[in-house]
Image (tube, one colour):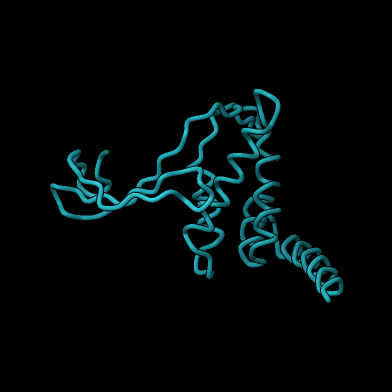
Length: 159
């Protein structure tokens, strides 16, 4: 495993744990060249559908792209790295369970928005603003209005 800091290839595993959902092994490693520590995740490689972008381009599913998008939306929010990884795993599982060889990027985006909406309103709106490419403040306000209506409905149903 190559060190993300110095590029050294010699390292030792300091700690290994099974993730909460049981789908990955989290390893803390220490680079023998620079002494810095980093975390890696080990997953079972499964066949994932090809992602079809809005413009028709096709590209392989990229777990890291999902992680980066969710992480950006959750920036400065009280959301743990483990929770973010759990969301990424849920999106990946959603794609694995999809019955076709190709999946539209819009389906993935909608799944992420659904998960973020349940988790954190601010993260949801951040992701939605990029994903839906809000053109101006009115688009943003419309999304907030819709989110607030759903949020108010949930509150009414709570005992």
